[in-house]
Image 1 (cartoon, rainbow, N blue to C red):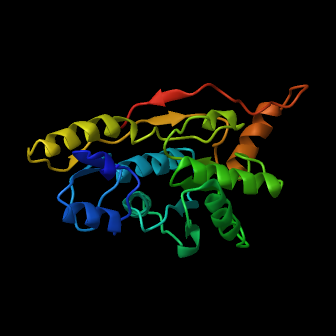
Image 2 (cartoon, one colour):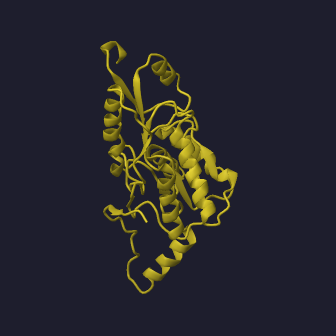
Length: 255
């Protein structure tokens, strides 16, 4: 990109301590970070409120009756991994829930395979959580792969929420309950900020606000015992068992 003599760059996958950012700053290249932050705030960033976004997932699971909630965090070399983990811990504490260290596993990457490896570690304990908050959709899909290989039913035995509302995630059945892509509005604002900075205008950090939640009722539900009691009550007096409902996605505004 620099060989094309661009006036500025937008970094969307930078790490907290990224040598690429250091190099750009030393070259006096205008740079804006999107969906990421630098550990020393050396460049302006355009981000959403990831803490609030993860808190929405915790609130939703709590409202369903879950109290033993786990978190597969993103790599702590990225600001999103750090912020979303902080949001999870804060949301749990706000509801008076103690977070067992064994209920938090930091994935080694934001990839599906990273989610699978983290899920294997998380589910190796004798007692398992009833719900899981993944730091992004690929991690959630990796968890789903492990559940399927173990013969576990989702959401009967474990509810899962993702984060990003990534394209094609609906092709998985059932699709992860989700918080919409926090980067979508950021990309436009990031472009505006990069142009302004390249023109010499001062640019400060911008926060786009918290995402709303997208609920899909196929992959999350009440804790196992609650779900079983409800199903027995529903099936009482019926000739055929009630099948779990799989509904279309609907947006739930931020509360």
